[in-house]
Image 1 (cartoon, rainbow, N blue to C red):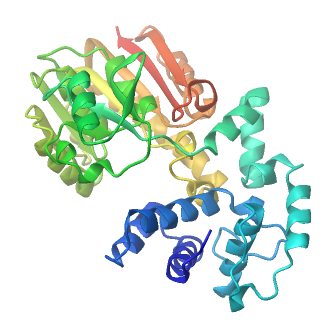
Image 2 (image 1 turned 120 degrees about the vertical axis):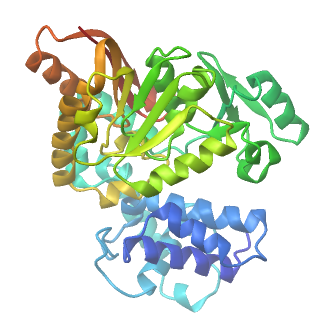
Length: 404
């Protein structure tokens, strides 16, 4: 395998930006890939794949403890060259005869690497504190979930059924050389057999599909919506689930999509326009917004902020930037949202509380506490846990409650 210096330098630069400048991996890669228009698909793939995989396995690559920590400590680009050299050696790729690799001791690296594989938190490349929390909350299931979260995530599409059926989309994609597979219990989902840039296709630009993991695609149907209802997506973000709800409602009724950040709602509007969604209203959450909406919704979706531990496959840098105190604080925020926003729902209406976390303390336990502290006000209907280890998708939790 011949390594091109310009591509390796791009990987080194991206790693430095992620770890020392504390920038988000996906934003860094997007910036780097746009920096040289001469790079072809293979070049771009090399950069993206190597950056993501090195970030994912950062601790396992730290075979002699001499690298910058994920908190951004350490200095000098030479340290990142060392990381990249270890990555090549471990993957049995010959090092180029470049000055940066002059003093690399391959035998020592491999020996230390083999020793590290005996320790779970090194083998699976996670911080000590996260390994402790995972084992505490998931017990014997932690090993399997952790291993699954370190696998590369597949690309999964959700058909926009306002415009075409899944079978039609599959046929159209096949006609342009993109082969897909269906998912048994998700009627709009298609899994790409081979990773490709679907965003450049006319099918995407015309709003015929969105990229959305299968785990996330379970949530909107779980809310049990019908055409004509008044639905509130109270933590809408950029609107992936809003768009799914609109399709399930056949563009009828009304969806009020809310968030505390205006830029996310602007992105939602842009996506809704592309998807031919016409029943969505965006609303910025301000101090009195929730109180003014009391008893107004037939359905309420609370896809609350969380640790994001269920989507580490897609965001491997998050495990290095997360802190235990953040998780403790976000659990308080989750419960405040659940307690306060639930008043938006009419009596007899239904609500889904959802997270993209694998931790019960952010999910099942929050719902159990809510029901216990609101006796005779809510009826528990159902819950679903999507497991990376068992289902092969991102980790999600959702609970359906009815207001009495």
